[in-house]
Amino acid sequence: MAIKGLMIDPGTNMPIVILRDLDNQRALPIWVGPAEANAIALQTENVAPPRPMTHDLLRNLLTELGAQLVRVVIADLKESTFFAYLELRHRGEPLFIDARPSDALALSVRMRAPVFVDARVLESAKLVEVSSENLDRDRLQRWLESLDPDELGYKM
Image (cartoon, rainbow, N blue to C red; front, side):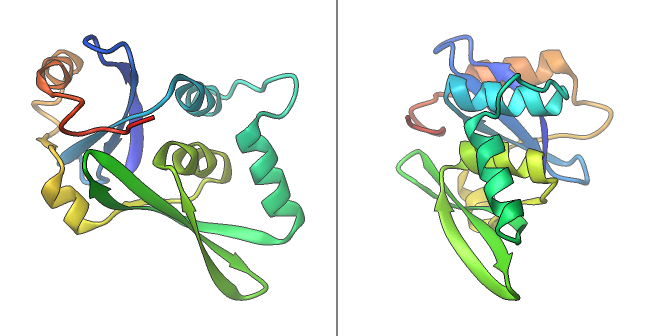
């Protein structure tokens, strides 16, 4: 999946990251905190802060230590909370690091790592089926407004 964009939930004023599969068939919303949304937005808009942010620091540390971010995996959804991990490769060995999805996504855009969502998460999460003909911003906004963040989302 890839980050399609960021939106604000009109009911809670919390940012939502919209992930969309590469076939443009499904979209998955993940509620995130304002700081993480800002970190994702800055990178996707190619805005360089005057000093490294936390996710820039993580990227720099991984790079200096010779580790590669192979991929980010949104691996589980329990009680309305998404769980993710980073799959790293260091000295030829795989490493799996537990991470909040918002942090994992912020790091993935900095390191150009692919994002995967486990099939079980896709099955249990509320998804919107989309196509190039019917996905427009108004439709997605209406759909997001109809969601209950207590049923699905990222709890801070």
